Length: 307
Picture (cartoon, rainbow, N blue to C red):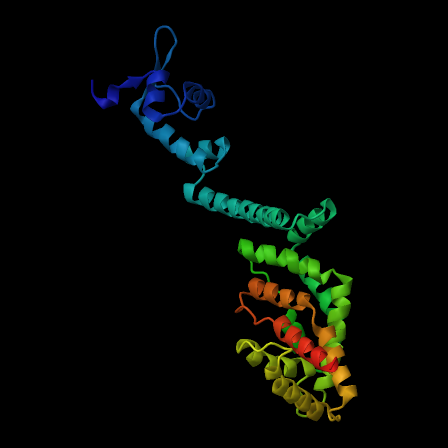
């Protein structure tokens, strides 16, 4: 008998397609595939086209399409490409949700937060773009008050999570958002911004003490100079001289006390962490951390103050 006349029982069709008898019977009952004939005893028999039809149905089901949509595609009531596009868009939305959940769960596994912190992390991950912007604006309003040059500072501190963030960017956003909600971090950063503005005031703007300490300490760090060692003496002297000239103050014990207090106040590892997270979110180059230079400078100043 040629292929056009071949008929299959449900069992034979199951072996041909890899589907179960129960599944084929279900599809047959719901009009997805129809029998070409029946035996005198009433058993269903299917033609060769049923094999191709069931293979197509299996593919669409594995892609996640529902039976109603599949039936309409098979009956040509819906175009496959249109359904595929709609389904792909729906999957994109589901994938975005799953990535958010994975980011939160990864952060929870790494940081072992309390139940309350876990809930807050989950809520922060689910914020819409508008809600994220509102949270960041509130943070920056409290830290970078309106003043000449504030727009540039705001831009340099603003996270811009992309439409399709990576898991690393999502995790960075959750942690950065938590930092922005920390009142102690906000207060510390506001004091830093205020001090920076007062020290940089003038025409042309002057480098602030923190920038000067970094410029002097980083070469010493790179050279392996210990802050308490005699080799650090000329570095500390140069730093004090530079700061005295910049601040227009004598290089005396008052200035040295001011420098030590200023650098200790600025030495907050959370600032480096904010910068690191911001760079990940905005896909910027990784920033050079400030903390090592400040730690070296304060240790060097403190060692000489104790002499």
